[in-house]
Image: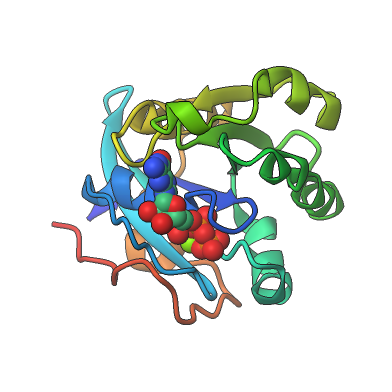
Length: 204
Ligand SMILES: Nc1nc2c(ncn2[C@@H]2O[C@H](COP(=O)(O)OP(=O)(O)OP(=O)(O)O)[C@@H](O)[C@H]2O)c(=O)[nH]1
Ligand SMILES: [Mg+2]
């Protein structure tokens, strides 16, 4: 299938914050209570129409555990259009831990790379530990950023975040990209290894 825009987005953040669950919710509209830890790197695709154009999102799921990240993540960092940085609203430390990911972005990406922040697990209202996430995030990052509270469990704001990121990237692109086949667009030098997300389904 051909498309007008290919947009590459990576979800990054500490372990157990819900990165894989957010992708599962967005792509498959499901939720798993026992989502396995991501051991490597994988991607899912989602086709949608934005601004009357055919858009394919290539969504990279990364491992939160540091021991699985470095070399693989480096390849992804070089190739994506945007990052969604995820923390867990019920775990204060997970927001603080985003600083390690911001250092990696600073070292490997263009300064104007699009960053969108997610505080996930908003459904766990009685367990929220972070009172004012925007204020905490401002201590970590000086540039403008977008922020939303999401729940991969009940779907709150999940579509909104992915579509906001996709639209922002399209608006930033100076010219229409040439139509390309999906198969050609998988970044080179990426080894996809065992991961928690289901195998990619063929798009129709
Ligand atoms: N209640 C609730 N639980 C969630 C939500 N998102 C994820 N979880 C649960 O949190 C756990 C971790 O979710 P994952 O999606 O595996 O987290 P991850 O960030 O991909 O973790 P790593 O792969 O280890 O980096 C799982 O048991 C999920 O079911 C959410 O929005 N609400
Ligand atoms: Mg995962």
